[in-house]
Length: 185
Length: 185
Image 1 (tube, rainbow over the protein chains, first blue to last red):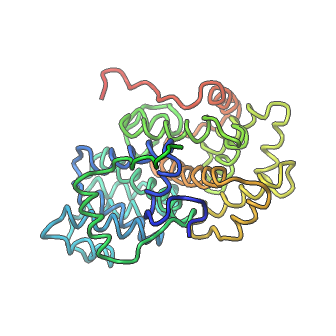
Image 2: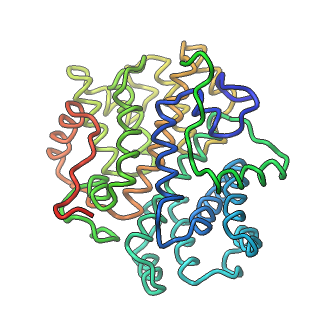
């Protein structure tokens, strides 16, 4: 049971956005810009950063759903996602991506944990200012989404198949605000 | 020096929003809805929750600026702000506000740190679902803003007078996206 009276059986952040559409709008817009708009980081890579941070925050709902979205984008290479979540250093991703995930992991701890040498290492591997910015903001944003979902104990499905379908929807439709419940608020 | 090439001398999140206006827009909109729109929590109280979480995350810029905004709203009772930041249990605020700050402090640690008993305690003091929701989301959002500002090492003024002026501006104007630098991006 969620800590507040949200629509029953609606998973994760969706139920919270239905409870409070005024804050839901900018939250979904932020996710859409960060994870879907044109970027030199692929959608698969950005969803992977989101899943990686959510795993570190132990937020099952965000981790499973964004891992599933990342897999949908990786397609034939979907095993990369579980490999990164297990041990990103051993995974078959670029050194640039490893350096960016390292920065995301620092942000998950605290902003001040990011050191100049972490930034330098990402630049050496070819990361641009915009890629570094977006990595920090994705990691910071999921430090918010994770706390939001867990702090209000919103509904977390446990069936892996449900996340698979969710990931495909997230990949196809992006982050569109759910409809306001009937009768409005 | 910030970790990325943002406008020099522009403090805190403002410089980051000028670097990346597309993400700045939903970020400012979120702050405006949470901290300024009509609520049964006063603007002074909501800014205080923001300052309290920022202090716990040791983010000087957000702590000083939102404390200053809270003081601007408290007016003659502005000493409440420093009292809360020193020890909220001893401060002259309502028991409901203490229970909500307690929840915000849990969210700052991690969402799953919020327990049913924390929610029950806030309800006993008269907190509504919407107040509990907004407290959790303000605390989660500042867990993001703090990481964003510190993770990119954006400019933090050290002169207390500068924050006083900033707080008055924040109280009067709210959260309006700064202009895009000349030449556009």
